[in-house]
Length: 356
Ligand code: MRU
Image 1 (spheres, rainbow, N blue to C red):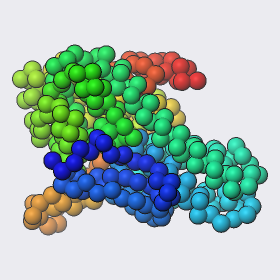
Image 2 (cartoon, helix red, strand yellow):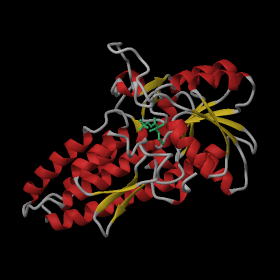
Image 3 (cartoon, rainbow, N blue to C red):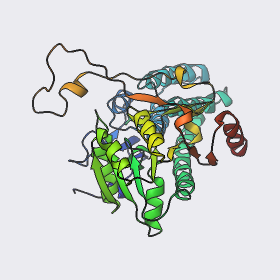
Image 4 (cartoon, rainbow, N blue to C red):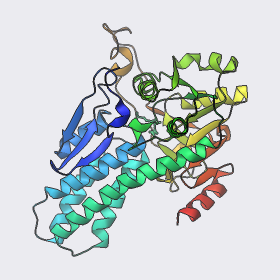
């Protein structure tokens, strides 16, 4: 292992350099490289190429990114400032389509500008800085709270299966789906974590397994198609996954393959938990059918991880980055305000009432 990734910031504002500081996740686990990005185009590219990824981390990166873009706006009038801010916001918003945290964070930043209509750009810049820092700090508290609620559902020594990476590398700290494991470690508990490798971008193998090993957790890596056997063997007491966008009825979009894990869990009678910060619950979307699913390049499947191409030239490739797990397959949704259960249209109302 090169370095303990858990002592580093996944995503942060570097105020000395006026830069977004991230760990380049495309290089993990082989190389721990910290990037310092100031230009809007570089921040867009970092999100688009998954150098920073995971719904909450994307939200924090976007908030810091739009603040840094605002710093570059050289306009004396409010209207001139807002026009350029809006252009930069729309550009960043087009970097990835599925994780709602991207739009949620950018909308929060825009609200700061709109709520201070007529203010001098220098004041707006200071307020935007405070909001970006607040979004990041809130993320840490939210993840810790999700971790506490998640931990209440499992016992010391349990086998836990996870898909993709919804850990510290996907957030500012702790993660969502892996937060109960990190908090459990803090309390001296030990879990046996099974990480699906998560084809095609291997977030499970490269990121979750790395993060769990760094935390000293008993970690076993499996190919995605081995989950059924591991569950059948009785090694999994619960599945914990993250999400990128949850509809008002509880349908949850997460990394491709998640719905298959949920179907298996139901078959074997294993609880399937989705860890969902309220920033990832999109009450404007009624069901999962309306969630836009990102499609990525065929090369991620045919050649990216191989020394030579592993599929015939000219073959058609379908490469959706996410799928939607129907709410009927989800045992409970773990938010920072508590654990929501079906019917989600009702339980989410109670969760959001608590938030207000
Ligand atoms: O394509 P990615 O790596 O950004 O996908 C990430 C996931 O699917 C995560 O499970 C999700 O964003 C939740 S992260 C707390």
